[in-house]
Amino acid sequence: MTGTAPAPFTADDYGARMERAARAAADAGLAGLLVAPGPDLVWLTGYAPTAETERLTLLVLAPGQDPVLVVPALEAPDAAKAPGAPGLTLRDWTDGYDPYAATAALLDGRLRGGASAFPEPPGRFGISDNAWAMHLLALQRALPGTSYASLTDALPMLRAVKDAAELELLAAAGAAADATFEEIRKVPFGGRHESDVAADLADLLRRFGHSQVDFTIVASGPNGANPHHEVGDRVIERGDMVVLDFGGLKDGYGSDTSRTVHVGEPTDGERRVHDLVREAQEAGFRAVRPGVACQEVDRAARAVIADAGYGEYFIHRTGHGIGVTTHEPPYMIEGEEQPLVPGMCFSVEPGVYLPGRFGVRIEDIVTVTEDGGRRLNETTREMVIVD
Ligand code: ZN
Ligand code: ZN
Ligand code: ZN
Image: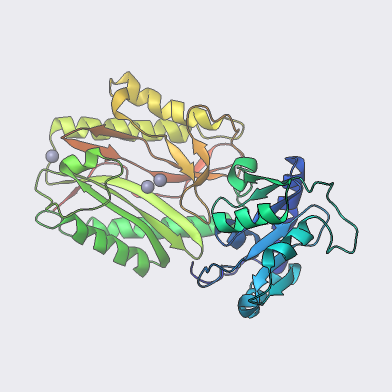
């Protein structure tokens, strides 16, 4: 957690998000939403406690009700400064007091002047994926008969469609990641440890405005065949393919891009695999337009790789959403029938992973426009040769 989200969002923007979330909850048959510190709370209120403690902080949203933030008294002054605070009622609690009883009373209407919005028993609530189990268990004890759904399961598309200001922030984060790539391609690779190049990537992301670096994957030679390889002590050699995948948060919004470089001149075989992944990435991008199901983006990219006989070496989904986090819905994966909507923002990142040899992945963040897609990463997708 890194403080509150920055401008340009106003109290009205946050108010509109909270109202939209409460309405979406009702449409999904939920009595309300319980939002713990984390990405949903940041998106809904701009509030991120500086350190998350065992003390309960919980935003309670319900249709037709004013949003209430249950917050420890000692953190209330900070919460009151959050950009979304003007649209909230803060209900602070002190040590020695039972915050779960107070929250339970809120949920079943006893603290709402008798005008309970909820049927008895109080029903089913959506709760943040990352809420602590101890809080949820205590709420269940305090309110027998309630049931809970993970917020992402219940409302997967809550944060998926970005507004113009969010898209600008995502584009700026993408541009910063691009600037990082333009610098990293100039540094020496051969003879250095993967961890050295990863440290360079992190420094560059910060230099170009990232406040948080989420990952700096440098996977050289055979390590590139493992998409989850992060970074190790392997010394990069001349002749290696090197998968670079890096991103984090700039001004509260995410970047995530991959390019695969080669140390010195590649072989024809390496070039062919790189070209194939580039064509697959292009096909995935070309599939992006409003109304198309997410799985069609995956299918378009996968077909190129499968048709070339490498289908079994493309071992992950084609993409994931991005926003106030670097991985979130919507997912570009077989079986996801959610249609694309203008303003959605996600990665298109096919790869080929050849065990014991090398891997290639090319990843751009793409946003859905009225008539297609727009890339938020614009560095060359041709193979870059490094020293
Ligand atoms: Zn090579
Ligand atoms: Zn990535
Ligand atoms: Zn990604």
